[in-house]
Figure 1 (cartoon, rainbow over the protein chains, first blue to last red):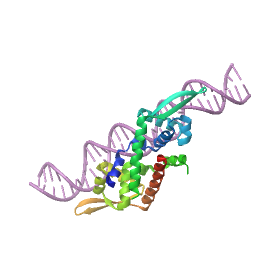
Figure 2: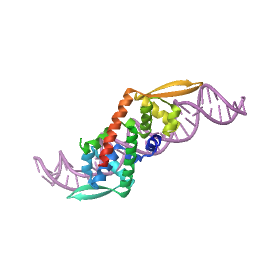
Figure 3: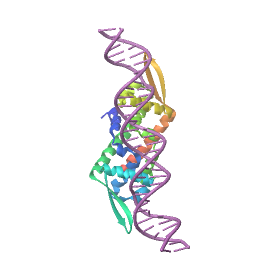
Figure 4: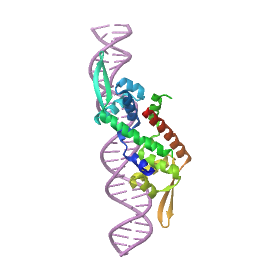
Length: 105
Length: 105
DNA sequence: GTAAACAGGTTGGCGATACCAACCGGTCGG
DNA sequence: CCGACCGGTTGGTATCGCCAACCTGTTTAC
């Protein structure tokens, strides 16, 4: 693959993942495979509203599952990466790696 | 810098550059230091309208200069990276490299 | 007992963005 | 002359990211 093609491949990166906030979320879930809302809140640096809407979008894309349960008596939301989410993340990561390499040539 | 901080640094990447279309444009100008509209049109794979508006935005940010001249009798638009544009690109590239590395750990 | 604060989120609205279609002025071929 | 083409620009639309306000239940203070 030549440089032009590599660069152009950026045009069809998964926009859902390309958004920094969601990239962070997915990166975390990729290694942890399970995290709750409050953990993500701290770890991502996002606001609650923002985090909530990004999670919803990731769920709609079926990249993650959101399970609602309780920790004692207070509600808790647990997120996990799906197989599709894992695959999409790996694809994106690979594309990005190639582009970064190209940018350094 | 630990992984959390590296990931969180994505939250303040330069959104102007993070947009794939503009990242491609800047990557090209970074090595060529001068390119005309039609060349960019072919090399980026963007549409005319889209390319035009991205160039305008990059110009407003003073990341590139746009000079209008003529090739024979037909108009021609030449784009060049500014010093600020170069610096911004390098910063972005560095951030991205770190994030990619983190994603592979 | 009840009012106030807090935990754990969701939702609405606003401002900004990317993209494409339609347009436009000039040039060239027939 | 006129249609096609070159080299773009502009307008409209649809989407998106983000924060403020809100909501349900729980705990604390008095």
